[in-house]
Length: 308
Image 1 (tube, rainbow, N blue to C red):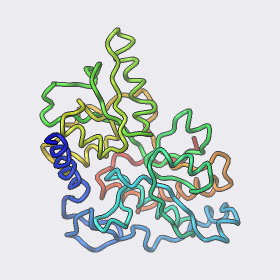
Image 2: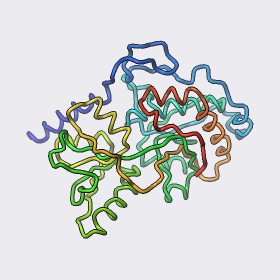
Image 3: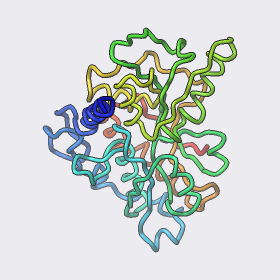
Image 4: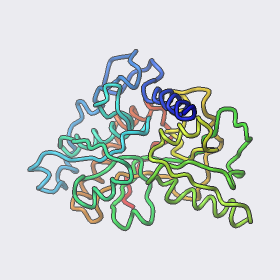
């Protein structure tokens, strides 16, 4: 019972992670200068005009419907999460998805869904595309067209002060939390474990798969796991909002893979050419730079919306 209460208290404390933000600075598309980021729900795409080249490539069915549906797991700040009103999607991915829709001349409909259900939903026709910090993998590319829009990267968070003195090279035999369906769970951690530990005769890294990054950080804060392996941007945000709970290991983890992340849609979709052109138009827009700067991700910018 005491253990349960401690976990509940920890979870409540970590919930603040989603509700707090540094104040100051001007959000894209707004004149408010004092709103915390988690309260700022203004739309960055206000005033953005359709891109004629993207609209020309748009399938007639979308022109008729006038709407496009994007799937996101709204649980990973600063990339993709809900504002304090618990209704408005905010973060880098919602910002850029809104601009993409405007470039296509369409209204945008958000669908909040667990990360590991997004690809089946796209394959089944429930969602038109996703912008949820998804990296291209061999498995995903079998069923998806993926269009680059950001540089990503992975990092490891450990308890504050790093009491075990862990490094990226000393995780062998440790319990490391990963979010279900994430690239870290599916690809990066197994690969890192293989070449860092198993091929050198050391015990494998024990991946502890958890439903979400919030649950993983809760487990870490209660010291039920030794570390969390996840997107570097999300871990940096958690560390900023909840100081003195985590330490982020430097440098970022070398996963020996392309770290670019992509928006994705069903493989061979007639929407692919239009979406690629719209994303390329976004990469060349002032809104792209403004959004990345606002969320502290200037180094994640790329210039080419290449199809994977």
